[in-house]
Length: 391
Image (tube, rainbow, N blue to C red; front, top):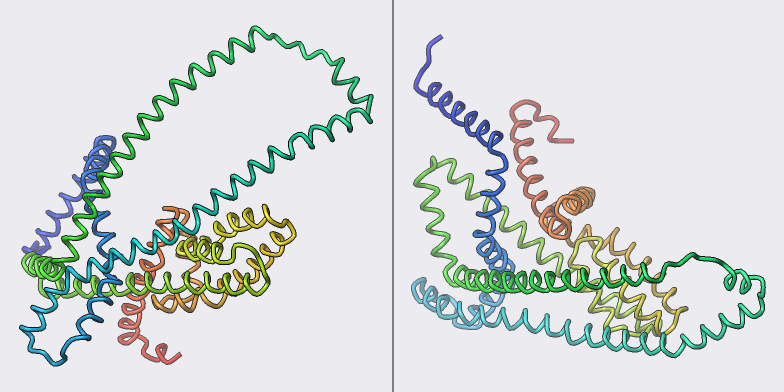
């Protein structure tokens, strides 16, 4: 058996890989600490990249609209200069649009929640004496129970209870102080990460073509031509899929929120606009997000009319079935090219592994894997069993 140059190179890489795996298993704790440290450094830039991608979807639409408002059939050089001038303006309009949506949600939802909790506190304060009076009457009508309560020897050590109470409050005060410091540190760290990520996202949005060209040069410099082309094809597919998913998810949330607003207005439920906005926001979480809005909305309506709260739950179940079986698989599943059953699988697996973030990531990610696997399957079948492609 002869070993040529390619075989020796593969063996060398295999030995290096085996050594790296052995060292990683041997110093596993150090590897975890190093990854955690590097993750803290890279986190602002990952956040900035995610923000840039999300903002690029409406920004591209705004930029294309502004370009179409001007003169058409412009020379390429003139068009690029005009696009470069419109880029900062498009980004500012996008940020104003996002801030306006967040402000609308805050101004509509939080004041109403505050008024509801205040009303609930007043209701409890007003009804507590009535409840105590009814309890006193009930004990008066049941003298046997009152006799048992009055003559039961509970063997209470008041001194011990007092000392335990003092110790509890002392330890609680220390815990509150420590928690306050941790919360303040977490808020400051999170705010710093957000600011760095936001600035990084703005740089990406302003210079995205230049960054794309630089990444393309790196790929062609360090990979073979066919490998670089394949990486670029997968990157383009991933970008299209995630963009379509984000657009479809927002469209589905708007449709569901509008359905609740119209239905609640027709059936004269209270808080129709508030619940519509709340459902639209929570519906951004795939499939299960609307249930969060249902709990909050049912609580708000319960404070006004318990019967209507039951009716709202029934209305929610009906609309949720309609949305889950017809709207969501076609709007979101269709936008990413993923069959309905795999949308449900992606949400379930992503939610189990990474929570809400996993639900948002795994649908387009599974769509990319599904598309690549389907292309590879069809490519192999054309060589081996082309008759199966007709089925």
